[in-house]
Length: 206
Image (cartoon, rainbow, N blue to C red; front, side, top):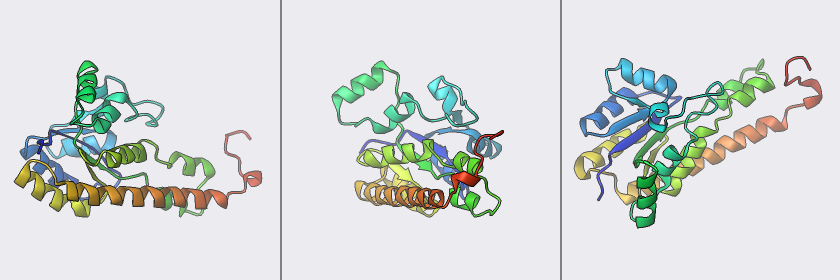
């Protein structure tokens, strides 16, 4: 079993993350993070590399572009046992990202506000989060993906015991990802179905 070396953490629900990230650090696992999550981890005394530093590309467009980069997705999607993948990653200085801990913008909480505008709702549709989650879930053979803080203990237990998680656990976690992203997209679609564009001014000045 290949030892996990690197984790990317980017969370809306940050409950329990300081303890989880501290344990990862104690196991010698490098932390990558973004925005508010990186700040929270640093405030807790942890060493964190910003994703923008890792990729060499800044967060931009008001945070719309943070993790959508080949060094992130190549690090997630490369098959560790594929020699061609390994060679290509080495050529492009892409490092393995072995653990993804991500949850999504709180779209349903945002639109539960009766005064929520279409523009506010649109800005709370997560793009990078579901993309990372789906990538990690697709490559569950090699990547541990966590969407629920309740799964931190089992992941830590296996990391301490084996240096990585078991394939059975990664498959269990992968299924949770697709259930989450399916429910997330369903919630977005259901809310948008109720929007009357004739009475909505999406762009200022319309």
